[in-house]
Image (cartoon, rainbow, N blue to C red; front, side, top):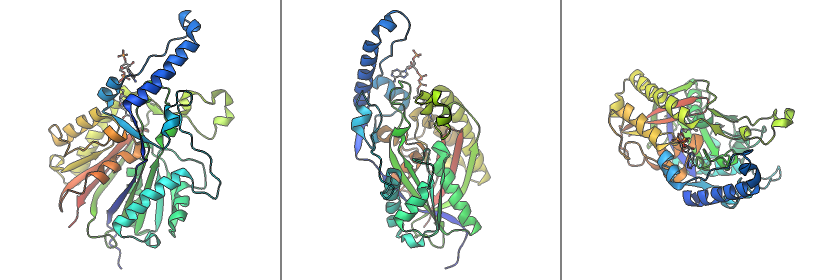
Length: 376
Ligand code: COA
């Protein structure tokens, strides 16, 4: 079979953890933590030596973010006011690690949907905002578990990891270095979320997605042509996580909140919306596509208000749910997986010739666009 060097999306896969946490459950747990904390420190608070913690509210969460519930890998521990962190027991080195496990489940679905045997895949990219260990790469473990010959490596561009992974995979195909590449995004965000932080305790959810990017020659008829990919990064401290391998070299900072996800949400909102809207419009222009003609926007799923504004700027009118589908109401922010979940769940009804965009944005700042057209 000849290679066309033309990258397409052959199929996607999704793994959703069975347990969900509603805002009401989350707020009950958080407020119990606040009650206990304030009772424990009552004297210091009364003496003005320590601020009292404020309770959270379901109304605030829904209004500010659009999130109603999220999936998590360990509900009991994140909701236990004495723990407020997932508990995932360590596994032996010869057992599949949890990130690989959820990634493999999503990847298998993508392979099945494409009718692809693992032996035909050339590379695996594990593109996610956190890796469970330094090495060996999660991607190589996933590659091994699936029985793929070839190569794999990890890449982390925070919320934009999946779109950066798609462009990387597409570039391998364009260059002729691979014909079938799996981009796997296992996002166990409950591990980096500070469940005790009122400003952000509601933000994230767990999931895994997979995207099979292939040479058009190899792809099933029912694929998505990749019309163009564009990546952008602009340094910002407004979303930051200082967790890293040098933490042990500064033990005074161990366990501090900055070793988990921290953000200036309002600044992120204000700065990222115009950046992403302009990027989509410029890239559409470069590709000779009228942005107002886009049939569907599969946007990063962090905040319903951000998506409403971006979609409005791109389409020139308030987007309907059909034009810009929401998954963050039930998945919350799943970091790099969000726009892929939206694409996975809301692309089956589109017909040959329909053009849309997968778009991610987040920490870095980082943003990625993938313009796709349904083949047929
Ligand atoms: N419950 C009740 N009230 C809360 C609260 C909570 N859990 N958290 C914050 N508040 C209060 C604040 O104290 C503040 O009160 P004040 O006005 O009296 O000072 C008020 O609500 C507004 O807080 P703010 O943090 O400014 O809220 P916001 O409207 O900016 O919404 C986010 C917060 C995080 C939902 C929003 O900023 C956001 O989604 N930003 C973009 C995030 C993003 O995309 N990040 C990318 C990560 S990948």
